[in-house]
Image (cartoon, rainbow, N blue to C red; front, top):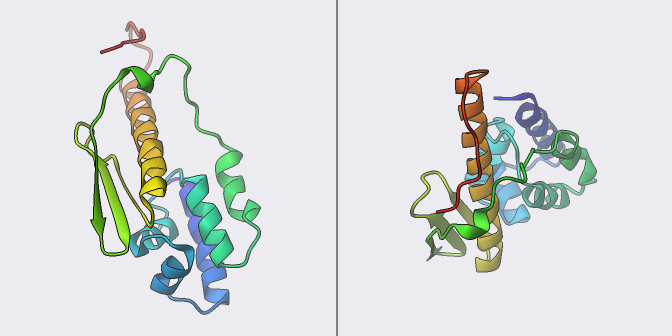
Length: 155
């Protein structure tokens, strides 16, 4: 759990308690999956999506800036060398009751769940970028200052 995830979780939990809402009620009001509320409050989502935070803030009748500031103060670095447009991934979308679930077959962990197909597409795109960024950061930490060659790669 990182500082951003922990801070976001504390604020959401505080406001949810103020409104005497359960996690399920907040999820319904915000139009997000109940598991998303649980993961946000537990700080499991290290860099929450701005769109999700805005939905939660609206549902809690709070200024969205109180939540989004944690993410925008520490913006994710997206190096210019990464071009996702040249790679063809396969997105799979499935309706599950009132929700749409989406995932990318070729990229484990890239998944999203939203109320509309359009929102699911947008969230899935963000998830893919987040996973690529996280993987990049992990390899940078692993290799540290070793002599390596990094270059743009197009499949």
